[in-house]
Length: 164
Image (tube, rainbow, N blue to C red; front, side):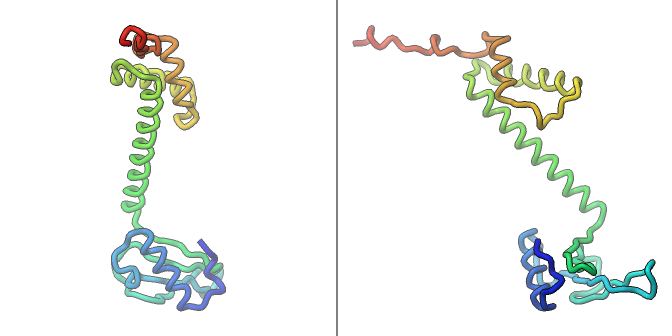
């Protein structure tokens, strides 16, 4: 995000509208925009309404004294965003694990998944971070330990000479 300090007021509002639009907010140009201005002393600041109204419409966009754009929202909304990000991270992790398993030609995908999840739980108990686990290496390790869970290339070879 660009620093908004030196932009003209109208340009600041256009920049804020663009951010609101990227965040998928309806009617971005109607979002409340405030600016932090110095108060009577060092312990006080004033929020000056630049656009919109003092409504419950969330989030509020605030331009700080340095010209940076801040977004003020409820704790409930932030918790929902964090939950959404966590869910998305879990989905990405599952997709990566699915790809790693599929590359090794499992006989029964679910069986390999169960073993992989057990192995991951063990690594997490040992203090490894979930993001640091190389899933391809993990699945290859499972394949070495449990070859009966995977097809081998020699099992899949077709005897072409016999067909001719």
